[in-house]
Length: 122
Ligand SMILES: [Zn+2]
Image (tube, rainbow, N blue to C red; front, side, top):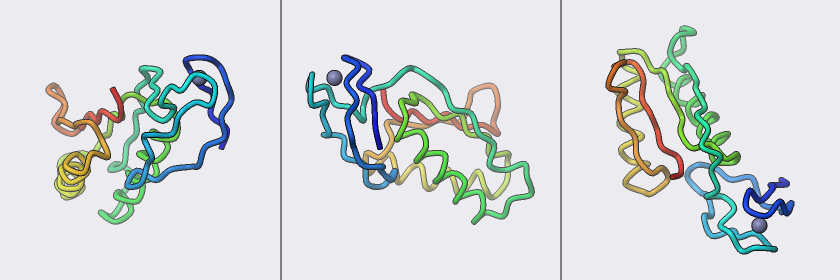
């Protein structure tokens, strides 16, 4: 895919990454900035639990949203998970993802227990 460097404007051709396999070392050909780590400070909000999703469906939606976020410039994903099994499953996966370094951090929203804030890149 073509990705514009936020530092210099150069259009670079880089692969589409998966959250479990993103190469954070891909650099801009012109200014050498780490392209995939560039953030525009944006928040991507998504609800994976209020459309009668099964746990499996919710987890596959989560995967799509995380992939969307890493392939764009998203700073944070605001994930609406509700309060049931989906939330438990998501928290387990995010714990693993943070351990692996796929995401920076995550935390249940202090004002809404059914929402998890995930920091994708600083
Ligand atoms: Zn650049």
